[in-house]
Image (tube, rainbow, N blue to C red; front, side):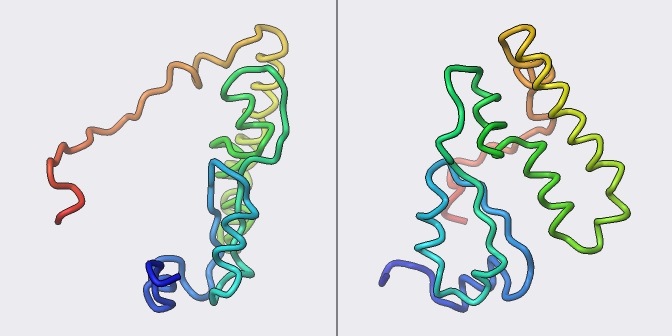
Length: 133
C-alpha cells in the first residue's frame, strides 16, 4: 500500500528475526493479511477476537479470547527463549491468576477487584503536541 511503511521502516519496528506478539482488538487474520509479505511474518503471533465467549464480564471476554494480560505475558515467556527457565515461576503465577479468575467469575459473576479496580501505576506526562515531536 502506498501509505504503508516501507520494508526498512517495518523491520526497524518489528525486527527481522524476533518473536512478535500483536494484541489486536479485531480479527487476527486482518493483521496476517496486512503483513504476510513482510520479512518476519513467521514470527508474528496475533492475538485477537476469536468469537469466543458469551454474556459475561468484560475481562472474562478478553480471557476467553486470550487477549488478557495474563495470557499475553505467558505468551511472551513461551516465545522468548532466554526467559523459559528464568521466568518459569512467573509463568506459573500467571496461569494461577487465570484459574483464580475463572473461579471468581463463576462464583461472583463479576471480575476480580484486582482487575476491575486496577489503575495505571505510573505518572503520565501530558504533552499537547505528542505527535509532533
